[in-house]
Image 1 (cartoon, chains in turn yellow, red):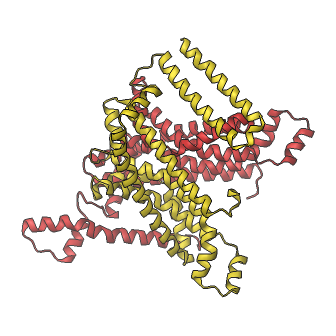
Image 2 (cartoon, one colour):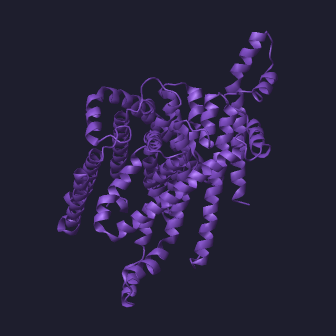
Image 3 (spheres, chains in turn brown, blue):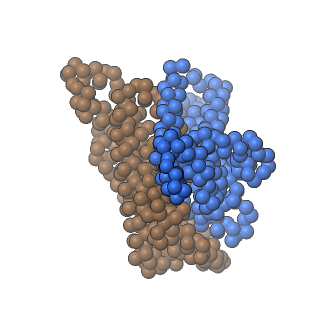
Length: 280
Length: 288
């Protein structure tokens, strides 16, 4: 009970600290903007630890963060193998193939107004569908190894990127296109120098949505059959044997991988679309 | 007409491609069967056979349509073989998750708009929460809630859909609640309106267009969440469970018909929200 009360006190102290930082001159600086969420995150972790220990929550319901950290540290070998199988082989290869394919198709249909009017609404609709459901079919077609996971990822990332790219390519103003025409620029020159750069903010919007979808696809596909490694495989088997610390370690890996992947795409975005108002 | 024609043409093209793909996908089995029986097959025989296999690798569209007719129209709605029954199970969790996610999203948006501390603490974590693949957490939520004594699967599935659904609502509600300009807020001040009045009479109405845009994304995300919640967890009821069972029993027709049903459900839900949106916006006097 004392630990539980300590958690409450800690919560209020952390919130008070954050309010102080948010109200001070630090709030607009980089330090302040990083410190506040970090303090918040750490206090949540500490409260989790205190509550689990204070209320004697059984390990099969919620392991304490320190227990998870121990498992994480002792199982790094397994976690790395799973990460390589799911994230590097399945998700990344599928992401690259899916993005390139969607991009190529977008460029192709962009040349025809008819196709654009036909495909855009359908693509938008398909992008909202539960495409993860195709995972068992694709696992059946491409076998248990990472190829089938990559295939699921391709299908999942294809439509968001297609729709965003087509929209982006249509984003130039008539004035700008006319200007290119007065320069007597060819189709490819207009594409490379005007329309593709103008489309990049949209493309990156799609690429960022797709990072999360890629990991989801690769993990779900493993629930339908995989070699004896991979994050989805480990999660489903560990849940079965109630080794929740292992499950949480895999979740931590998935969270880290997802955040890093998203962060990497955001960095590239900042570098490519430095001119866009949202980046300045 | 000009807008519908391209869509119809593209849909027809997809259907045609599907039929064309059926032949090479299923031909292997046909040829193997014929060899075993010692038959010679002409091309026409192969094509005819690939269209009507019992367990095709890729079922032909008319097979899926027949399966849908069988499980939707010809089966009693209460039967466990009826897709309407499974769709209803999925719909329930989707709506619960949608309600929960929307409430959490709006609540967080209000606290973020009104409290600088909440804004700085919560917003980065809300973004990070969406980069975590929810499917990693889904099986655990279900097991943990089961050990806690929560009966049934509606609650865990609803939590998973809420997790996917709250974020778009949060982001647009923050935008929407902040959309009134300094002029409008100043006007409220000259009326000596208090914080509550400014919220109910200015900020909330101003955020409604933003809210509906995000609800369309949110309801689709909630459905995806429910199906994700059904897929990896050995559920026996719901569209995701039909996909799972179809996979386990090697019945591709079941998987495909459940997928089509899920697509129809998604379309119907988004359409309903769109209709509500135009009704509400008309009522509130937003020019359309």
